[in-house]
Image 1 (cartoon, rainbow, N blue to C red):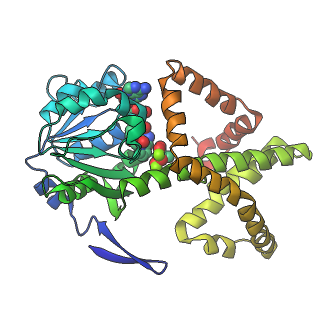
Image 2 (image 1 turned 30 degrees about the vertical axis):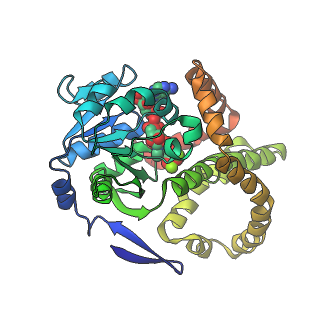
Image 3 (image 1 turned 180 degrees about the horizontal axis):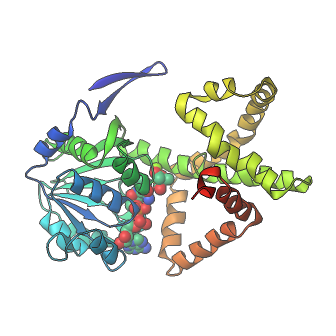
Length: 348
Ligand SMILES: NC(=O)C1=CN([C@@H]2O[C@H](COP(=O)(O)OP(=O)(O)OC[C@H]3O[C@@H](n4cnc5c(N)ncnc54)[C@H](O)[C@@H]3O)[C@@H](O)[C@H]2O)C=CC1
Ligand SMILES: CC(=O)[C@](C)(O)C(=O)O
Ligand SMILES: [Mg+2]
Ligand SMILES: [Mg+2]
């Protein structure tokens, strides 16, 4: 276990160099892993495990059955209904959508055998058990590996050799092997390192992060700035370039490469001075929003919103419409035009 100093706080992380793929294969050699739910995470994780030589079954309904077949899973051999896959496995990766996990739980519960491991990639079902009803029997392991990125990236990073970071946790250790099983699966799905968490810390931070800086806040502040520029007479190309394109094509890459100060260090004095002054104003302005977001996560209000929305049979159609509004907005149509003009795309 590597002890790593994260800005003065020492944490123990598991790297793929310490817990090697060879070791993961050894730990999992007598296990059958069923990935129940061939969605965004299920697909990425099962393909990576299969490529890593793990014995993987997929459990899926009509929703993504054809995709699983197209990816080489064979009906009756490596592809089954969710119940059948779960019954045949020793480690059950429960990767239905969070609302789907609640819905299917009465059936799934009956498929679990003593000594199985029930695996999640989110603390949602377990932590909000009053709302989901997901209460596993005492004689199984309940474990978590939560990749910190989209399932799409879990796969593409695996294919380009870079990997993804994941958090891991054990909620219930019935076999005495829960931790080892967790780490083995974590490495097998393509994690470059695994940092420790609990189901509760994972779900609180994840729900906050995606509603906040990673997705909701990011989209909101981009819209706000774009609209102000447009209101003041700037063209769409200018407003989009100054709000999104320069970020994704230049500045955030510098942050990813070497940190925030590196990005500042590589911009003009003019930009540095102004941005450093404005940074604190923006931070202070959004603190109340983030406080109320965290509260809404902790109290289960966000959970209820997700569960209620997913119950609507028209949810996917409604989502499609919401995404179309974004897609068809001037800002994101301008974005499409700007992306097509990137030198490397024009060369094709
Ligand atoms: N999407 C992502 O990249 C990430 C997802 N996670 C977690 O991984 C788990 C799986 O999430 P996703 O891959 O996004 O799931 P998803 O939305 O892609 O759905 C996975 C499967 O769930 C079933 N399903 C979907 N909606 C359903 C419904 N309303 N009722 C019954 N079944 C339904 C379908 O069989 C589908 O193939 C969740 O716990 C999620 O929070 C964690 C990290 C990132
Ligand atoms: C990709 C990820 O980890 C998210 C944003 O938390 C999610 O899709 O739930
Ligand atoms: Mg996440
Ligand atoms: Mg999430």
